[in-house]
Amino acid sequence: MKRRAFVAGTAAAAALGASPLRAQAQTEIKVQYSTPDLFKTLHEQIAAEFMKKHPQYKVTFLAPLPAYEEMAQATLRAAVTNTLPDVAYQGLNRQRIFHDRKLAQPLDPFIAADAEFASFGHAPGLLDVGRFGGQQLGIGFSVSTPIIYFNEDLVKKAGGDPAAFPSTWDGIFQMAQKIKALGGSTQGFHFDWDITGNWMWQALVFANGGTMLTPDEKKVAFAGPAGQTGIATLHRMVSEGTMRDVSQSVSLQDFTSGTMGIWGHSTSRLGGVTKQIGDKFKLRTAPFPTTADGRLPLGGNVAMLFAKDPAKQKAAWDYIKFATGPVGATLMVQATGYFPSALKATEDPNLLKPYYDKNPNHLIAIRQLPKATGWYAFPGENGLKITDVIKDHLQSVVAQKAKPEDALAKMATEVQALLPTSA
Image (cartoon, rainbow, N blue to C red):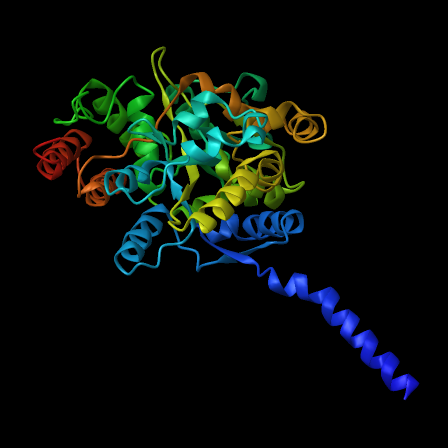
């Protein structure tokens, strides 16, 4: 009987000890993101670290989407069925629609009440990419700029000087021709013009000092001199730069295998590409060619809050703050080629400074920040359709099925017809 009493007492004590934990149920935070080949492992790492620090929360990931367009469409559908995620990572150029439809929850009250957030050193210019209508609707998670990657070994074999890599498209095309002339399976150059959201097309226009629309957003502006130069450059990439009409997956494979010399892409792939290359050849990066007044669109995504319940909003904010803060930023940079909104982490010897010191290729994007501008989002209900229209006309130029000037004129006409008349 004494033994039974002891066991019973022990069980009761254990139950009493456990009851407070059971009473405090975890708050679930539903999170959705895109581009799983780039972000899946990273998001899982960040969530694991977050839940270690905040055991009262449970992060649940919804099925990831292939790209930012699909991500935006899925979020809009979820709004109709009242199944919005608590946090969603939206492309910088897809935030506008969530502002216009009043779906994204403003983060300003949380920022104002959170003293720790100010200590993270978010760059004001990078916070601005998440501001719409005077409200902070997104916090930059991963930010990028377009850059030029090159194979130092092939450049040397072709007679080039890696330390004086060309800074103009003319020079790059000439270098590509020399690399292509090495023969065999060697390819000279590729430019991933079809990155989601017409990002590289915007880069070609902005780099020449242009804009997508007029300041009042009523008329197309990309058909002007900057756009004419931009689409002519795209055509020259094929006619002079040795570029083929191939997919992004083919260009990635060609470059990382060491058979292609020069590759125009986003810094977003730098971390993964570096690992894939290993010791096959020496990888170098160079700035994206721009004119004196040229700009470059920032790419990447922001964490946005969609939860409406106050308790869920608090949990979601804690997660956003962690994912975009120093710890999340450090994990993100080490896994990708993006740079963080919390630039203070890049100067911290306990966080990212040693990484950047050992990986100078990653510094190119940060050095291009003075030329940075927003990734433009077209106004109105047809924003996603406009993206498709532009892509189709760019494809006709790359496939050499249309003259660049004709494609640009048709593109401008079709986009103008899709703009809201009251914009």
